[in-house]
Length: 407
Image (cartoon, rainbow, N blue to C red):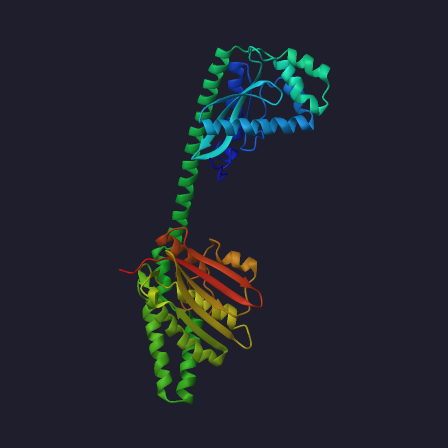
């Protein structure tokens, strides 16, 4: 069995509750008890520990051996899927019941520290043999060992059954608490998404064009109309009208990558007229990906970020490259720029679930976080955006989508 620690026992069951369960068990049976993590380290304070075990644990070597023994006992119980009765490193008899929540080994309920009467087995001599390498005081060990309770086998079996019931009760508590945590997380995620996708906000985004973007575009058209014939001016006007028409369509629908690329070309036509040779653009999308589904207005905000925050601040401008490829059932689209780059703190804030702020110069007002969340809304949490950037070198934004063709 493999051991995972996605959750820790202390995270899903309150430590005070674990302590109360353990204390009650120890009070009812008279046995020592402790609850440990997957490495054998105590989660709770020991209950009713014998003076012998307390003395052994007071030595660094003894404590390390106790934890290692507790670890082995718990893991053996996992393998057997039932309580495990065993001799500890000091020769005493112990019990272990595994605590397994959603196929994850989170620890064990341990009890015992008793002597079990057995023919042909001298527990005291075995204790001396096992502890001999650690130079502990033999007189003290002998005196403390002699007062350890001798427990008949039937009582030990009853204690094993009870410890198994208690561990299963802890498991049930853990499962219930995990379900509650997951439900709360899902409710929060849903609330965040609904807030981000609130219809009134989206309609506001769709129905307005950032005045800075529109002002720059109209200035460009005016300059071109003055300096040259009508052909290039006509191309920009058409690009602008198509771009505005795209922004006014339903943002909640899925489109094809080909549609998004068409509108990126319209956007780049306008920006190239504005910036001239300072902006170079390369689009290299595998033709097989053109019919893949993508949320509307997903690529344009990324290209705008690349221009406004990456390339525009550079005196000599730079290059934007949009590439895409399929790897198995996943599509990766990369928007790269050779701009000024972004600091790690800025990268983290761009993908943090904060209230949207409209960035000056953007045509849609839709931020990177909005794109990321909408992709996850449609396709699941394994998809979305990832950003890799180096100051002074540029930025790569990776968009992950499923290989799902538009119907």
